[in-house]
Image (cartoon, rainbow, N blue to C red):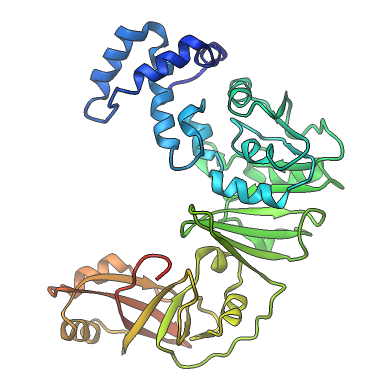
Length: 388
């Protein structure tokens, strides 16, 4: 169970004594094997402050790949889990550049940290006094106030909200069960410019949202959806934003052409980024890059080249979807390690891999999908990671 921070902990950790203690505690391994021994060592060194010190060091280590400057942040476990990765927050801040922004669920300040350098006025508010005190130390350039997200306390600002996605201890995809509930947020800020971060699993087609729905991925993993009201939105209804931690980014929107042919497979099967798929922009992405579809209802694309930054699989052969036929073809190719991708067919990749009993030496990929009503399999050369 994670440590429960109080205001006194934040005051101590923010002061000179706490900062010095945190530096000293950096030499503790804090691994699973050493944790109990390390906690005893911390108690001997830091007394009653040992719990806050150990938990802060652990959280900072976990946050290093998520938050820029995490080695100096104050965090709680729950706040870190929900915090927007810096690369994603920076992308959103770039879209809000020049606006006055009020983050009404600011927590420990992950969004504020990226907004302050590019926005003339940045206000953060939260009901949790501990997280608010942490935000004050993490982002000294923001104006902070304790307030309920459903009680407007600023004017002429773009309102940014990140409702908690857990209800009754479990993750929820129901907009009405977010905290605060999405319908209540929309009602509270009716007529205001509003930007709401949401789970990508929300059913967008059921949302009566008048602005833009953006789906964002980072390093190949879909991270969030973001609802943009018509004011700060840029003229699209759907947008996929694909980010990498190295700073590269690209996007596709439904304002682009989506005319796409359905043709037999080309030299490559292209697996579009998850943000493109989740945003419903596969056809727009394919049209941009001269690809075509195997089936209009399946998100795989095909073509004679792989777009920059996409993951493509070079087709070696196409076989009917039957274990015997697949096993024979993979055996012929001396297949060993096998990556299996599935769309449109009810197949468990792990169970199928076990049944194939591969004993070869060369890695391959198997794409199982449906063309029309027929399940089919493409045996492909092993693909490198993203960017292949």
